[in-house]
Image 1 (cartoon, rainbow, N blue to C red):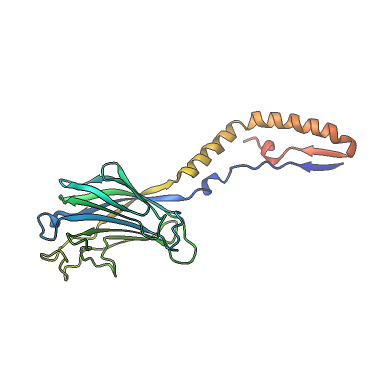
Image 2: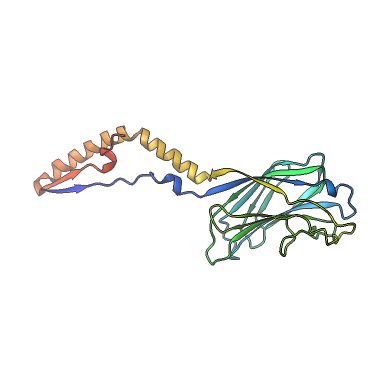
Length: 249
């Protein structure tokens, strides 16, 4: 008698289907900006697409802004896949090559916020990149010790746990907006956790639900197989349950 086994697709690998997001707590001393003649200042965030096609495969979420005595000035300027505001939080999607948030602010003693960043890799060798800078009254970045773009934070999304580069200001250069060089230490970036993206959570919940209902499902499945075996018995066929229904754990 020839036996045929039925395999039932499962979601046992649900935790690896979705991609994780890394979560960081970022804080920066902004006291040296208070009353500086290069102001007014603006916060600037970018998430740019490495392959240049705007594939929208990564998202940066910026929330929990604390200005420590500072205030936001006016409405943000949003470019490309940027949305939101300082009160409710911003999001950046690399749906264009260039995606940017600019938010004017009056600096307080310090600035802090949470950054959640997805880590999907781009094909082609050039990773997506997140950056954070502060602009002076001319719209130019405050000079920092970064190699080229004068940013405080730079993250190239080249792995599931990308390197976070931080930079202090460059006190050998004066701001384009005027005044003395600005002395600010590199921001403090503290990893908080890895956060499953929504698709992962949904699949995990689906997998748990499947485990809970397995007994009822397999009871029905065995009834179906019994009927099929009865019908096919004359052809020398027998249908076996899958490994899924043989499991007892």
